[in-house]
Image (tube, rainbow, N blue to C red; front, side, top):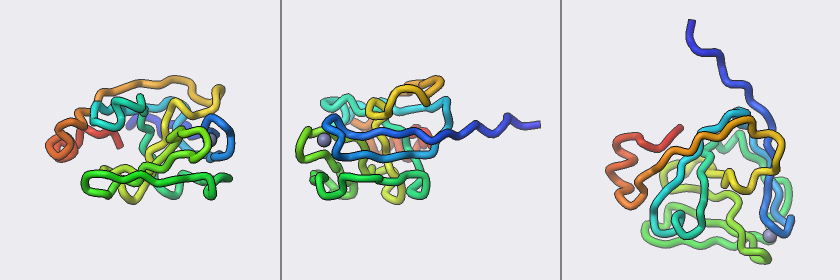
Length: 133
Ligand SMILES: [Zn+2]
């Protein structure tokens, strides 16, 4: 017998001012990545990587601005009003989303394990699959 499938729940979250709101289907016990790259280190972003189909933007699309740098693959979207990046499209998973675990509403996360991700050495770290799925 393998490990039991994780129980998934509906987490809700959003930016600080409340214009951007989303919901995401993910386990109640989540593993998130703390990345040390130039932008994540400054923002303190904690990555919860999900499939595109597990993420729904409920409101606030008109309040989002996009910032890109380096390869331009990652789409760093943030709220134009409050400046908070509550989710974005990461370079490691361009077909999915990275949700900022710090922007999830309290109450649905039973446990959170934080794993370091060496985004300074992004190419080798992704090759070695150090990014949690
Ligand atoms: Zn906002």
